[in-house]
Length: 390
Ligand code: F6P
Image (cartoon, rainbow, N blue to C red; front, side):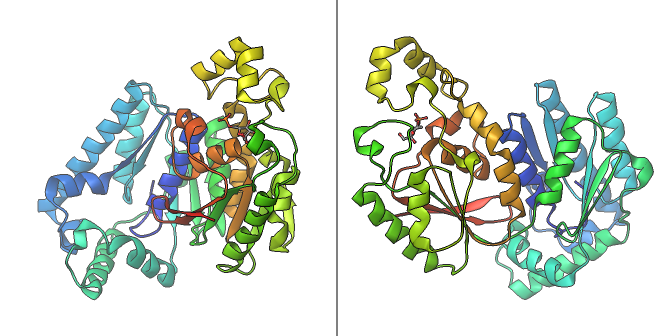
């Protein structure tokens, strides 16, 4: 990462890490500020960050190098991607990073976050920085003044990444403009594409399964059953819940009738997306788990042994579901308005897993009950979660 403080680097870095982990890349996020706080103590005045403060400059370089070494060690332990979250605002520092990575056989993509809008920067500082241990117990105005002074210290020697520094993506003004240079290979291209979509936003995401369908009490999987009366009651309660918080949310459902019926009382334009359909249980569609165990014991055992990778004959695995959900994730990242997603158990486990940064293998076991709204509100490092059983 590259950029002055309070530009949203950590927000982007954490999103990249969640996206990569969800797609199955082993990825590590390292924040140099955390190394400094752990080693030098959190309470450092703005002067500590002055580029010509000889007493502290060496110490700060030292922390950055320890963090870099940890990141490079990660590649020795089979890591795929390392995210080095620091200002890296000076070219000599970036040269060291590039040379160390090149010696370790690691490719570098600089992701620079640029924003000159004082209102956005101030909001970032207030929302994300004043709560840091750096400012514990300090009055908000004093902390704000100090953080602005810290930014000014970095700005004295900040140089935007130059064309001859190699591969980079520059995200300007929260995605208004994205500039890329020398993007090579599949992963870098995919990251550049993802970076074009992400927007900092405060809007909530509501995830819910459909209301109870006729298959649920019978414990039958898959199918395309309508809602029960109980399920229709949930649909009404859901509309009241969401409309009580936002009059015009975006509403996405799957293309199956139980989710479309669940969203119907919203009275909104609904986008029914096949990508949100439930995991395809193939030859097991319409059976109960007991029937699968009795009729296809080998399939039952294989799924129990590796639920994430197990693919139903003529159906899908959780790994397949993640692949088909990727376009939904990209759309979701680009949305600024509140969104209600009415889905199914497996699909919502995968979506929730992405949003909450859960490792792939945990996804098939995440708890997503019926008749419960999961409300996710963005923060700098992820989402705050609240659950509302209705
Ligand atoms: O039982 C409801 C359901 O949505 C099924 O249609 C689907 O096959 C299942 O949940 C997914 O859950 P699991 O992966 O635990 O079987």
